[in-house]
Length: 394
Image (tube, rainbow, N blue to C red; front, side):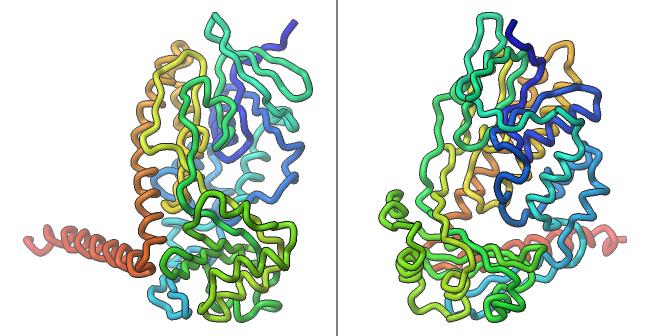
């Protein structure tokens, strides 16, 4: 007899784990199927800033706010914008307010994993196909040959989701920007010039359609991305397995840059890893179909330039879980309510992300990014002035 699973979450990233956790604290069980063999299978990426409007709400719904605050990276919310000569154009310190606290993605994922009951996560479970059955349920097939029948199927399986085709034909497309990712270990001791130019938190160093984005990690390393507005096939013209050759080709894009900024690539301790940045069309939706939905990148993968990907995934997970709990007698109504709200917030964030990409990688960069932050300052000043009006009038 084919095993039966009431709620199956495909993908053990931040969104899927948050969903499972919020369901768990509300007395509802879910099974998480993750293709990686264990939590240590790969490095989980760099730092995340967790926003008050979504990611922090998700953590509170998961009853993990207290443990989360112990993971916050002191000073990590600092930010600086430089030009290619390393001239500081804008600098912000970390005020410790927890407005957008920085945390290591891997540590946050571990917190969520450890919060779930043993056996909730099925490791090494790679979905190979998902089929709709006539009764509204779904059949999942796995790489090991096993099959399960699912009442409610939730795709939290990222940009190239196996579940998404059940709902829409939309697929991610290249945004025009590619990243080259690398790390510098023990930076203050072994790479002092690079550590100094990056600063204590986040770095944007920009020149036209080339940018270095980096962050100081909790372990003292520097996690760096070189962003380039290039053709989609550019990464295929370089043999990244040949480290010396790849480094020379990539550094050609940094001719004329300050030595310390070039050093973030030239003196990196890890191989250069190319990543095309892809995104779903802004405003992607689908009609309500029984027994299945999506969250996070599976639903609305976007470029990282609004800083909302992980935050939205976690918030999707918590909001979907709460909607399921509130509609246990009528799951379809709960799914419809979740999707309506998710579509709206995802479209807004995706449009912001696409707009920010153009600001960061436009011909006169970094002027656009500096002006954008100046605009934020003006808005805050205006809001503060408005807040004082009643007192002045009194």
